[in-house]
Length: 94
Image 1: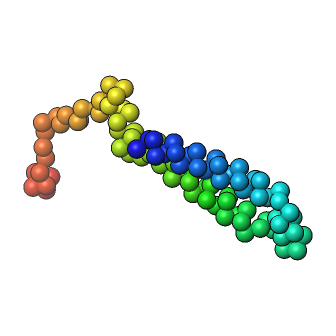
Image 2: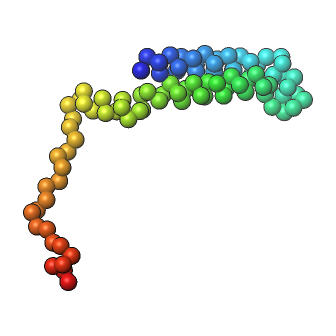
Image 3: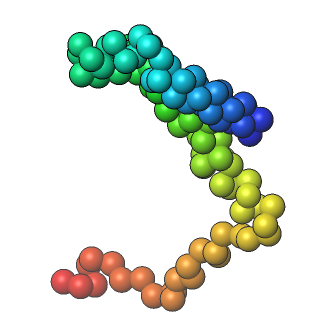
C-alpha cells in the first residue's frame, strides 16, 4: 500500500513541475494580462498535484499503518484498568 503512496507522491511532484512550467508559458502570461489570473491549464496542474499529494500521504497516516508501526516497534496497548472490586448499586445509595 505504501508503494501506491510513493507513486502518487511522485505523480504530485511531476504535476507540480508541469504546473510551474505552465505558469511561465506564453499562454499563461496572456491569461494573466487579460484576466489577472493563471491559465486554466496551470490551475488544473496545481489542483491535480495537491490531490495526488494528499492521496499519496494517506497510506502513511492511515490508522492501519500506524497500528502496524506500533506493533513492529513492540509497543503494546496498556492493560485495561483494574476495578477495585467495590460495586455500589443505586438501591444502596437511597
